[in-house]
Image (cartoon, rainbow, N blue to C red):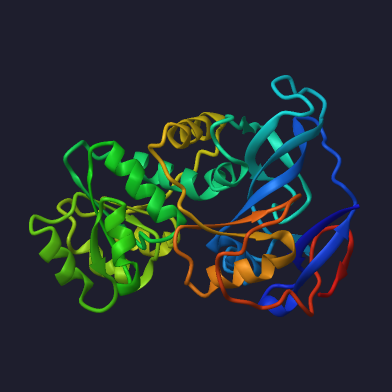
Length: 329
C-alpha cells in the first residue's frame, strides 16, 4: 500500500484527508516513481473547488509536480531504468509516496539539482517558461508580471531577465523586498494599479504575463503598448476579452531539461521558502490557498520535511484519493 493525500468531494478542505491506496502499476509508456518531493500549487486547491471543472473522477489525490526515483517501468519505456532519479508531471497525484509519470513527459534529474528543486519545475516553472516564450518579447522590452511573488511569477521574472527583458511585477506591500530581489520593479496591486504601472513604465509595457486575472488584468491591459500582448495562466475568459491568449503549456521533456539546466547553473532559483513532510500536507496547501505563500512550498516525502511556514487545517475530517480507504487525521 502507498499513502497519499487527497479529497473525496469538490468544495472546501473538509473533504480532504489521507489515503492508503494500492501502489500504482505502470502501464505502457509509464514510470512508477517513489516520490521524494512534490510541489504545492494554487491549482491544487482550485481543482478541489471545482474551478477547473468537475469531470475529475473522485476521490482524487492532490498534486501534479513531483521528483523521485524510478521503481518500475512500463512496456515500451527505453530511456529510463529502475533507480533513475527523475521529475515530471504526476499522473496519479503528487501528494503521495508513489505515483506514475508518462515517460515522454519526464526528465532525468541532474545531480546538481535537488529533489525539492526539481519538484518545483514541472508545473510552476514550466508555466512561467511557456508563458514568457509565448509572449516572444525581444531583448530590451518590458514585461509586466501580475502576481509576481508566487512560484510561477518568481520563476517568470528570472527567466525573463535572463532573456534581456526589463521586468515589473505586481504584489502586496509585504513582498516588495522579495520582488526587488528578483531584479524586478515592484508595483502595488489593487485599485489604481494602472496608474502605478504607468508611473513605473511611462512608455507602457510591451507584454503582460497574467497570473491573477480579473480586474487587475483588465486595468493592467490599458498600459500595453500593443493591445492584446497578454498571456494569462489563470483566466482564459478575461484573456479573450482583452484580445490576449491563454498559456499554451508544453510539458515536454525538452522544457524540463531546459529548466533543470537553468537551476543547475544557478540562473534560476525556485525560491523554496518552506518544506513540509507529507503528514503536514494540509498545512502547506492551506498556506497556498490563503494566498500567503512566497516563492514555492514543497512536500518532502520519504524523509522528514522542515516546516518553514504557517497555516493549518490540520488534515482532519476528510477522505480522498483514488482506489483506497481514507484515514482521518
